[in-house]
Image (spheres, rainbow, N blue to C red):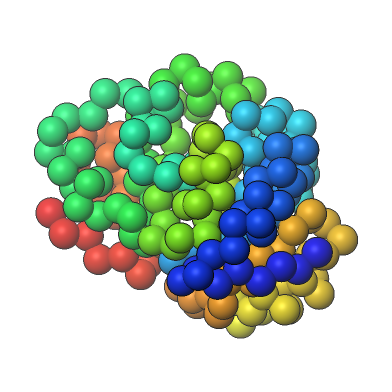
Length: 205
């Protein structure tokens, strides 16, 4: 199903429809401030396995990030961060960054893995942030493309995404044309920022 949501004039009924799909274990494709992404309810184990299957991997091998509404969700999933790290996150988010941080025990419990780090995203996009806010917990997410793939035009066009993925997900949200460049990935697990992938975001320290 393809639904259109204007990020500057959000229809709450469509947000509710998207949240209900997530609560029922569905996958949704949604816009961010970079490329379109796919996600599910972080609190739904069946949905997490479904998201892993979509990517062609086992959940314990998955490298999903989580999308939060704001930094208040961090303490549930991320170990204590120092003041300087928090300042950088607070300055950069919402924005086109994925910050890799040391994870609490909640993360391996959710993902059936021993992973000790987690990617955190707070996109500068009202649609997905409103969905997360209404859901009440983060959304587990992954890019539609694989790391080795070039981000082709169809990854940015919701109508082409609908043609490719309508039979694999519950909802595809048309929030306008996406970007051709992904988020900047910054690793903070060693206490200092290390850029793993330079994307749209320009980190200011």
